[in-house]
Amino acid sequence: MKGGHAFLMAAGGTGGHVVPALAVARELRKRGHEPFFVGKREGIEARLVPAEGFPIEWIEIGGLKRVGWRQAARSLGQIPRSVWRVWRLTGERRPRALFSMGGYVAGPSMAAAWLRGVPMILMEPNAVAGMTNRWMGRFVRRALLNFESAAAGFPRGRTEVTGVPVREEFFRIGPKKPGGKFTLLLTGGSRGSRRLNAAARQSWPLLRKSGLPVRVLHQCGGEEYPELRRAFEESGVEGEIRPFIADMAAAFAEADLVVCRSGAGSVAELAAAGKPSILVPFPFAADQHQLRNAEEMAKAGAARLLPDSELSGETLHREVAALASDPALLAGMGEAARRLARPGAAARAADLLEELAAEPARR
Image 1 (cartoon, rainbow, N blue to C red):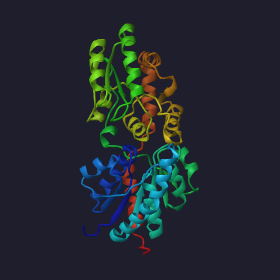
Image 2: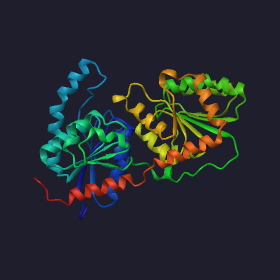
Image 3: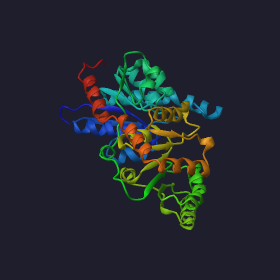
């Protein structure tokens, strides 16, 4: 593309890393640039990135935290080869800057970029900085944050709170009009959550017995879908169970209350849509980042925090019933969530990357 630059996008492993990076890549492509990705064949990027039409190069790298010593040793052994692979790629493609979302893929990519003198920008989507971002934060030009609390993990003066890129459809969701049946949206992510599925199933008889006028929309993942669908049909509760919800923004628009995990993508979507929520942090998330995200949302008055260890059909029913019976409280939570929304995150990241690209190349 005439006048465009190449940019290296380091994002892989989970949707929370890949989806925001894709939003930035789309913004760069719209401006005439050529972003390309580095990722793992086993990660979600192997499906999402090619589907968006972006080139992707593969490395082999694993995690170091919350893994056994064999996996940790294997991951350490993969680092030199992965750094060498990305170092060669940067020599061939000559990116003018790197954008990183952190995670396993980002470490070798950022190390290689630093060796090549490629300037870097990272985005920290969680309330506490991840291990890779903490390690590499001293070498980046700017660390873009979703929560101000994450600034503690980076050098003073290099952070900026921009929010995480969220699809525009979520920002266009307005407050629900009064009237109609209360709609509860439950989602454990695209693959579902066994814990959320089990608690939801236990709550259905309680919902029916209490007579709470609620409609349930539940994304449960494909594995447990057949059994859960049969159980839901037998429960007599109004609503539907789906293995996957393709248009999650439309589901958010229908919902009066959302029950979900508290990954960075989920909390950013809740804020953009202005939706009150019950957040159940995944207890094994690295650095307890889901717990920290949920704490920030609860502190702002946008969500209720329900620890995974306390999750059951009874506690879920109790929380839902309490909120459903207090429309004013729900409305206030929704307003608090929307105050946390930050549109334009992808555009701001692209602006900063273009500023770096305008600098003379160091190679």
